[in-house]
Image (tube, rainbow, N blue to C red; front, side):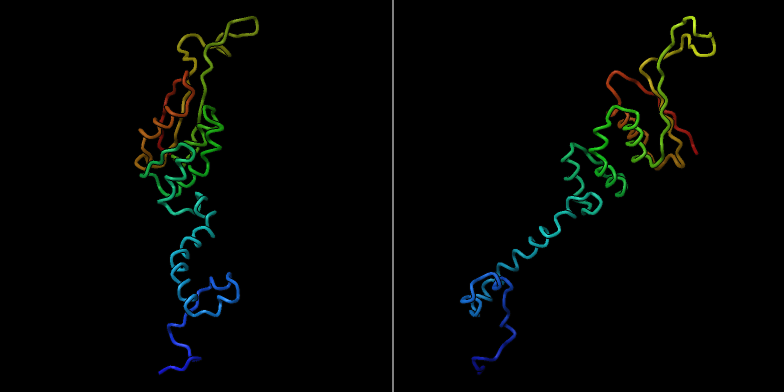
Length: 186
């Protein structure tokens, strides 16, 4: 038989006793009873202590990324490499601020394709006036106003889905514009 002052393996005390008045901290029953709550709330406290890691696209678990992307109305393509998905979610707000601009389109395509695209804008024909020289700074015919050209120099075409590139261009370009996509092997 055990003496009253001897401790056993079952004499485990909850750390929650430190938050209670001293009168309860001496109770063996209370120490064991609070272990139930400590076991349940411990993992939750761990998440809350590290909540910034769950909200940072660079550190969040991969299964957390679609949820973070939904905050900025972004649908992630699960076929993308993890690092590119993380970079897209991290850059989403900045990309939305620049949406419809050459700079924004360039940054989005760089994240997706992994290469810096070249984007050329066609401003249409110039008017002939006293300062113009035919053949030097004018374009007659064959002009496509509100059209731009995107040139992607890819190292391997298989790693970049061109249908996805077209979908990005369609969603990010200004509504009144059109584009030409030229893919070159680097």
